[in-house]
Image (cartoon, rainbow, N blue to C red; front, side):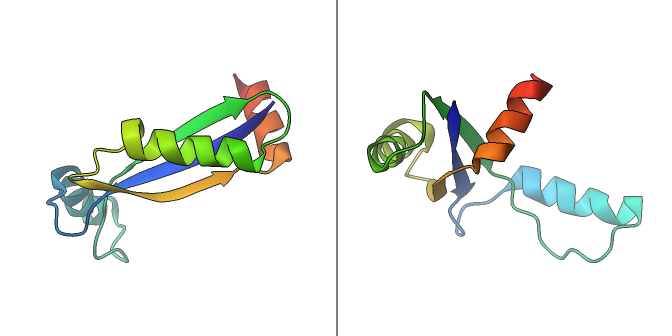
Length: 93
């Protein structure tokens, strides 16, 4: 089985209160190198067999029509994960 990853992020002009809260908490942990945090969503779609161009196109359609609220979010990545990372995750489950 192979996996496709879809990353969705808030559009830049949209406020991100969760990202802002994380950014405020980082210095309290001694992590001061970060000036901005934006929080998004990650989806992993599993397919039987290897990922094909048709699978990727279907994942893009799912991302635009279901996974992202395109009024306030944008799909920033749709790609197949390397086979070894899919095998490792299956073992972790």
